[in-house]
Image (cartoon, rainbow, N blue to C red):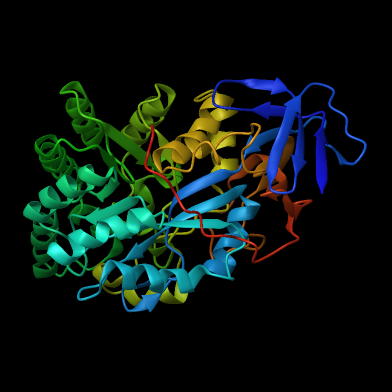
Length: 456
Ligand code: MN
């Protein structure tokens, strides 16, 4: 089966060109001007932008956490992803204490298999570390799980400095890459105790127990450990100017440090925690939203190509779940939805406001995550031989984000009322049209993405 997308503007990490795209089965077989093919079904995409399918390298679908389970699983989460132009998610498989990495991987595979409507891979979050687990690292690489996650906070999954050093050394040997949640666990606990002693249980105290110093200190410590282990590092969900400066310092020492941020840290700020209940609960995430100065710093870093990826940390809950913490901020499930809104937000508030360019948007959402997570050149570009994952984006459409129209299994929208420019019209996943006229038309065709070693 052949499909010819005619008349569109093909966006890459380098620029934007008028190019037709010929697809056969799962692959792109030709790009160029004025293509024709008598066997192909012609699709008129004049006036549209064609992006390589977006990759969201930070989602949590079907995650049991905080005594509940996220509102979106792989069925609803992946559907929302496709409507946001995301054709691949890299979710987090978590090794719980006592489990092997192989058991954890098998567990997460069952959550996604035959359910996901977009392609999916997993980072492996390591929480137990010993010789046996170290031996299993090679199994993960062989199965296409080439990126790993470490938490410096959260008692049930965190690893200590000794373990971080040993894990980074081991991953260096096999060419794995490590993403790290950087917050100082001990200081957070002390700050929470201080608030509790004073009877301060309101949501507004959440950000005060996880201030920017907690992120910056953890980043500094992590990056020094990575320096000793001679290992590249990804800092996930960077939020603060102070943290960003730690990354720059490490880069100046010659270290490889990759940075990810998320739309919420670019578009929302900590004043939202002062809203009355239950509104304030919607924005409780960790690390928390920061000040406007931090936001401005992150935008400037994106413009200067100092931040490599924008992912969502999609981790959604309904208001009923959020209300578990209405009288105690430490009991609010942390997280918010985002996988559906990422591209349109970055286009509206990044590209259209002149903060970043169209090729930068393509790099942040597709090319860089493909390279960083070992999916390039199969994913991350529209070029001959690559998977036909293509987003047909109408740059002239406009809309307003609302909980009433979103695809999430979530009853509120953190960006409620935000005006958007551009719309995902069609999405092709390995040559199959999965979205048409901004409706999901084909479900559950996502495949597990076996990834290579990183190459950014
Ligand atoms: Mn996360």
